[in-house]
View 1 (cartoon, rainbow, N blue to C red):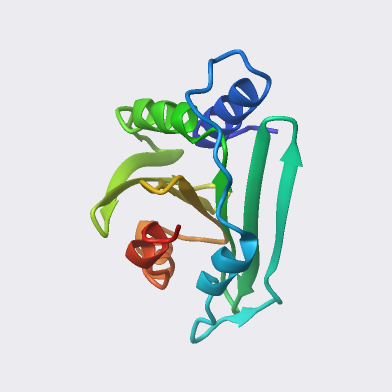
View 2: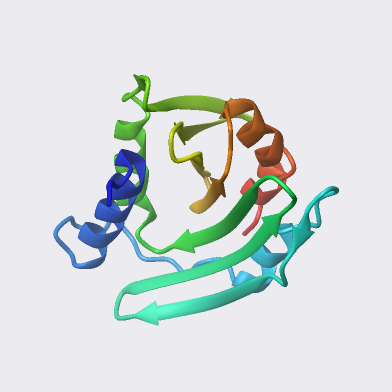
Length: 171
């Protein structure tokens, strides 16, 4: 199965920082999933599953995440809002990805601005898969993955339903 560059990069940075190959500048307590879950709002035109969340602790690694599935007659999305204790290393890897763009017959991978933050979007045309990822200053990561997404306009129209600025103000 072909993996996306964006997914592999984010997963690699998380794994490497978790197992300690990169020194961690600080370990903080993540924002509780109970606060994150409030931003998984109902969206007009979409049927949404019940939001789910969890707080996780494993050694020095701490995380919280909330996610929700959305669907209508044509597309499906999964939205995850997460806070990881290894934020500094994740942020560095994400910034490196922000300098990498691809525009080909198979995919589009580029940075996009949203509410003052730089996100990365990826569209796989043949598979009709899409991703949007943004890391906020408060260490929160927002990941939106879509299936049956035709183009970047469909993805960004859905992404714009989430208040990235308000999520960035969480503590």
